[in-house]
Length: 114
Length: 115
Image 1 (cartoon, rainbow over the protein chains, first blue to last red):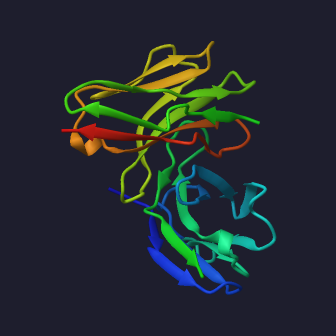
Image 2: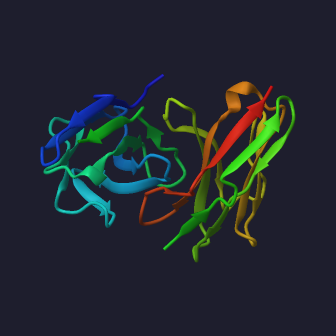
């Protein structure tokens, strides 16, 4: 069964450092997303990506964040200068089209900023 | 903007019993999709069930069914014959049928199954 794969599963970084979270979406999917879940809180939308550009982003997704699909298979989230409050679980998701088709989630990357 | 509210932070049920998790949402749209996702301790998000707003019939998936009340903007999840493996956080989510493709999640309900 196809699945969304995220690496690493856990990353610890020092405040101010750059991190790149990696995702391999399901191969025939066209829509890609990043979500964030701070421990004990709800899952929050960060950004959606379609046709090699951002289609929507939330208020959380400020200039410190960027996304890229560098090679047609990977989908990355970069945080330029991490803050303590960036510590969270980051989920990548993909879907084949808009609307009702389910979004398939990866297993998440737990980011800890110290 | 759409919002999703889950008013039950925690629920518990005896194994083999039935439990219902509540969800309400607010939207001005008429066409949208609703989902229940399960998040076990591994924290992966797993789709449990999906409902299209244009369908009057409530969705069912084995032991999982929903009670979709469009006028009341209510979307509850019923789990029948609860099993220990059902223990997890359950998130209700909304997705517009047009424009934004993002999922809007509720705060979640932690379900405990008592053996």
